[in-house]
Image (tube, rainbow, N blue to C red; front, side, top):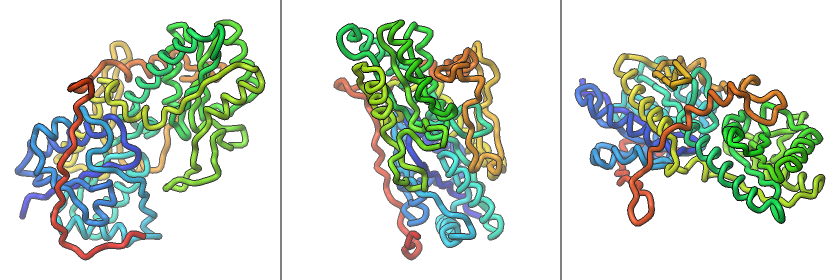
Length: 418
């Protein structure tokens, strides 16, 4: 029998280190030519499999693949396309199997968050029911840090580092101007249901920076919030507010809800920062500035956490090793073995326990007043932002790789997406 090929795809919002996982997958597969043939990548994620738009990564040099480790965003393109249930749209899943059969694919590596874990699990189940030999391994990725059964998620540590550094630097700016100008700076960060990213802003409190954090896990209390901001401004002359996009009122309505939906049917968020800033202005009269970190926080490879980069690569590497060990429908995980000094190892979790599950911030990682992080929260977060892994620079700009992404000839008829 011919050596089975592998399929790799990136899913959902990309990160500054998702390509490090891709590098781990491809380099590890190349070390086992007798057991893994060509690694094909899906152009624009799972859409590449559905439309048979496959990229031949064997056409890329070893140098180009190695450069993925220090390149942000998604080298092969990603997408926000959630496959419906098997009952509602079995044809898409069967199409995936058809494409895999046509191109001799025996390994499926899907690099993404909770929705991609669900897709990966469903594909593994369907392939078994159809009698097609396919090993489906999920490679974790999400800046939201909300996947269960893993201590942290690749992408999060670098976002946390970016938010912590940005909170520190902007706060020093505000402190400089507070006597005659801006007294409150509001930074909006990602995090729909979990406040892990916002929590990173609390790491600067130990440096004497007055910070108020608004978590999705703590329902917004307008009176308590304004009182806290007012007290900090009176004490320090200024304060910084880090607000998660998922912060919400007690009735569940998001502060930033726009009334529209995204591609996954989630409420479209945006604008929590101006809402909060205006609230401060109207109630307290303080001059303010606000900013939305948006794509900047997840694309900032120039300030990535070395810990995050190492974990992202290791998980991609381990995903291939798990496949070679005969594993199926599993996800490699990060297991923390010590806080000080920080130590970690790679574990494994079954996909049926990962798919469609979210990990929220435990209450004991949040301060008693709900506006900061606890000592335990600090111990959890600090190791994840440690170390610098700077890309090479040329003419003052980081050097990032753009792959050729040469397409594989199609063998099947066109397929219309639902």
